[in-house]
Length: 359
Image (cartoon, rainbow, N blue to C red):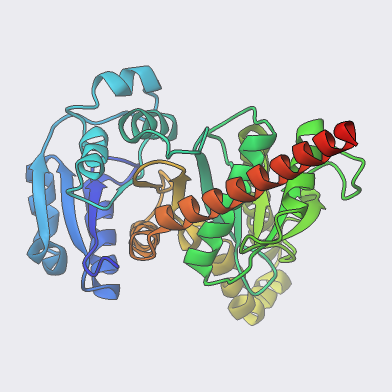
């Protein structure tokens, strides 16, 4: 286990820039004093913020660059600046082994493209997936993937996502056998695409893996808390994620308008403020910040672009947890186990077929 994780931070990524990223790193450092940082961005800006962040200043290395990946930059543009940009340098730090994880609040498409090009996918993984934690009504948060890295996925992709998502849930949420479901247009076995049906068949037979496959679920049940991992293609996953976030904002805005509508409503607001505060905290994306690209030869964590310092700290915490628990090793072990059982099953079927012919 890595006792002192080194986290490479893209200080120029996201809406807040150096003030928010360094403040978030200081919060993360207070929570986890063993953290060390490599800070990539304008040195003048970083040094100015470090004056108010003594914990980070004591355990960090500053690397100067004036080049940042913009929020509207295309992945091809970002890749051309990978050697000089704060985002590209942070990822290169992971590739070289100087850091165990990179954290950026920058352009998601650019981060995915650069990470995949630099780190490459793990052996046995066809495509990496973007996974994140979402709030639910249950005791645990929900791991959902893919959230936008792959718009089209075949059966093998979905099975691999399930294996990676379960490993992520075991690592971050401490679950021995996470409950895994596939997102579908219905819970019945006959519904859905052929890829979903085939993936379900394979996962039902994978009882030897440290997960519990529990079939299909629909979009309106994502927040119930009756699953720990939801697997889908990136197209559907991204739409579901944006719908959840938009609905949360709509509910909070409607409540605010209602409480401002009359004097009686304002008095009602004062009485219900504790409950509303709890709701606000539960729905705040900063409290569930830190999506990770699973399936790469190295850890890259994506923060919300508009995250505040608490959100940045939570993203750093996710990165540190994945480093310490060596999630890459867990994924490799589970995939190897799955492949070994699949090979043995196919060999047995072929032998039975040959025996029936010879018989």
